[in-house]
Image: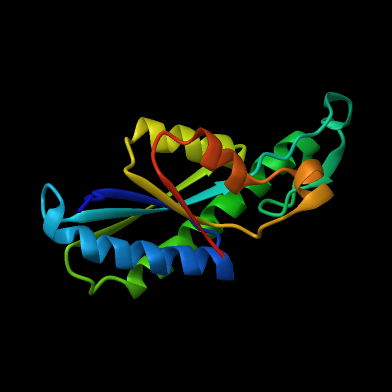
Length: 166
């Protein structure tokens, strides 16, 4: 049997990512006896997409949601990213609590701001992940061509096997 010591699960609390996590837990349970330390690490990974704004509008002034002070649109976007990141950390920590009693499986979380497919691939490569399990909507036809697919990009460029679930 192939042992998966490190499993990456891109997670956003959607039904698809929930299904991917359930698969990851089952595969982790099957891998425990074959893993190096008898522990399988499952990492819940959340990527907040970057909000790009043209330089010319970055100086527009808005009211900060945190301080009430007037700030630039650029600073407002930074605050927004920070708020999204904080909410994602809370969401992932709540999900991890649901699996705290599962023996020999270590659940961890990681939140990053960036382009989702690129960040998933980079993290999997840097952390030497053994497997990525992620949901996919299965876009087809022109939608796939126009919008692309994070799952497709990850499956094509990942440094390890990728399991796509629907």
